[in-house]
Image (cartoon, rainbow, N blue to C red; front, side, top):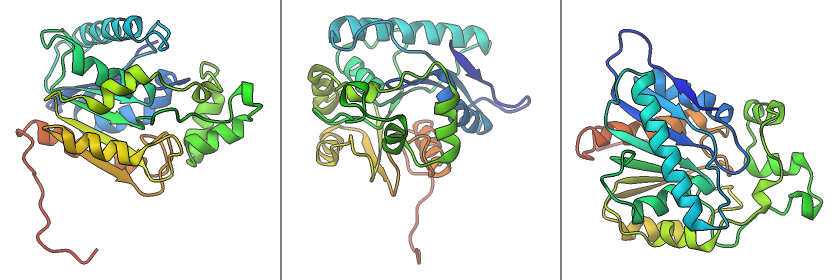
Length: 260
């Protein structure tokens, strides 16, 4: 079920963010993240999962496109208007899906964004060894996802979370589009230094090859980089990106001197 996070009354809305959860996750996974962005006057929609098997990239991308179109339409109704910039946030496999769509879809699409955030984008062939087929335990999967006790509780208490899904590798065709795209849509890559499913060299190459990209690596963070112990700093980095989009990607704060 889609969830919405509305800025406080009286705030001038600064943009719209649509969040697509990653493997096994639900909209409840991103309640804290959505609330933080709403506090900074962004209206936020968190969707469910695309109703298609990612193992068939064509149908999966079409399903994701339909999901995004429905989310944007619903946001316009829920918030009495769609305030731009419109930014898509994809986590894990959904990051690959959003990157693939922006590489191949028509910019006239209803959901076409002014920027994208790709969080925890998996590397080629990298998957958890803690899925049911590998005899893995839920606590071991949580260790791969996050060390944040609050987030671990959110995942553990949510009956909608599908455990063991990180053991399914993301299809190479989706990752090809994500890592080799030259689309001009500005993007922010987010990766944790302790993410066992990340390929940091591939992320760096992708960011350098794109016309407008920023790679932010979060010290100590695990795969669920938007929700790990560093979630406040990560949300702040996302807000910096959102604010920069409102000003043609110009740096708002510069640091000519610092002792740390």
